[in-house]
Image (cartoon, rainbow, N blue to C red):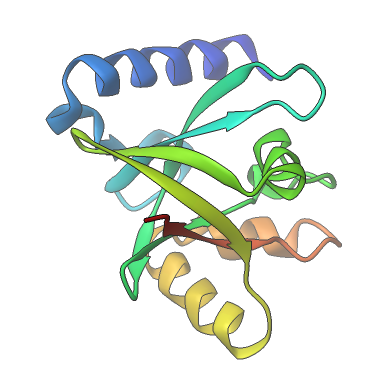
Length: 146
């Protein structure tokens, strides 16, 4: 990961954890986005290391669940957080000041198509990312547990 991007992500995570009402929204303009978009913090356990990893992700909501896109900017391989969820579907999210236990589920078929469209309306570069890669970018539902 580019050092500047890694620093920006780290700063965003710090802001989110210390001032959730500010960190929940991210200005996507520097990355070709439409402006301010909602973000959550995804906490997964590394499938190889067992260490907890935290990453801010743009999200949408559908039927009481959070929706995220495993785009990795259109890279040819899935992001590590998605591979971690394939290995262990239960994880945690922080949305604003609230923390939830969730179970990840990769969508398919018409559900994926509908949710992809919703997420591309929130963050239009997702369509460019899909066009840039041969892999089918996963659309993931994060459904609350309990």
